[in-house]
Image (cartoon, rainbow, N blue to C red):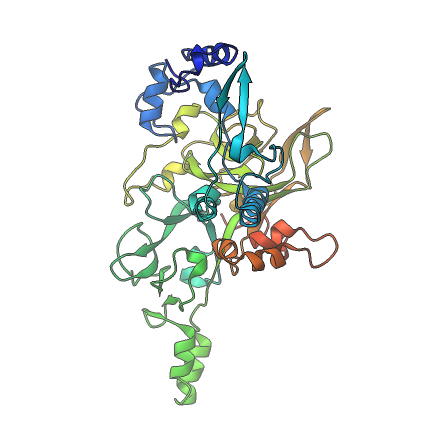
Length: 456
């Protein structure tokens, strides 16, 4: 049997009947499970238990989102919880509870009295629970690179964070290139633990690569690409070396005009790396069940492409193959050096879709767009979304996905440590300002600047 532990309550009158009903064997709902060789994102252990009938998929689905703080609303809830415990320090003043609940609460069942007194929770312990980063469950963070030219143009675009790499942060960008003949290119961004450098190269592991379309930055403190403050050294085709523009300007400052003119003629690229938290869905047509707003990066890949989740968890953005089964979209956890070949990602046609569940077909989703792009940022600007409305399917020319930059200059965990600063930062500074956006550090100026169009 599965259920609450045996406490003796099931032998009491009144309450015992309720406990006995709760302690019922769990039955598995009939549903089609993926083959044993296909791993779901929940892990092989959970999948095997489900196949043995030990996990109720409906119960699991009903608990989805429990304790999971999503987006602005999640941070707002965490902030409120932190303020509540720091100002109260006990359960006595929490709303909805009797004044003496934490000292001498009791419940009467059939004339017998059982003491259910709750021991007061230490203030430091309560705060420690809230300050754990895993409790906040912050969204995944991708990165946008701009500024590459010539051989380094391949670096421009959205690098999405790979999942299933055993905790090793690796970011990837894949592009289709060529006019008369098609070929595929990809680049990886990762941190080399030996050299302490953030590296961009054609392989997901290794050290600094001195090759076209490569770069590196030596920054031991940065834990994510968007936090890198050290200068980037870029491939310089004229010298066949890795150079930094600021250093080169300083070097030729006291040289002759020939050296200065040479650097002016063949400058070194300067790239920028921005943290991207997801996409904002705008221009939703009337009569649609779509929810306009943020689609945050979700820790999952489907058919080798990133998945995004609405703040409320009510909708997902994903890519699905048109001629393959849904189970084929899941992938096993793999070593950091093992990735799907770029060409293989384009072997089957497909579409980007927005639905209430990942993997829903065109007929089941709320909107879809035909495009084989690896990320929504690469979706062809000429492609149009097909949206389901009250009157049927309509083609929307206004609906777009715009990149949402995450400005993390004010670190979220520091805000919890400095409560007074949280209060001041969360307070609207002007009418109509969203305090949760100020707390979450989202750059409102980024909206509308980066669209779903991009170089494929």
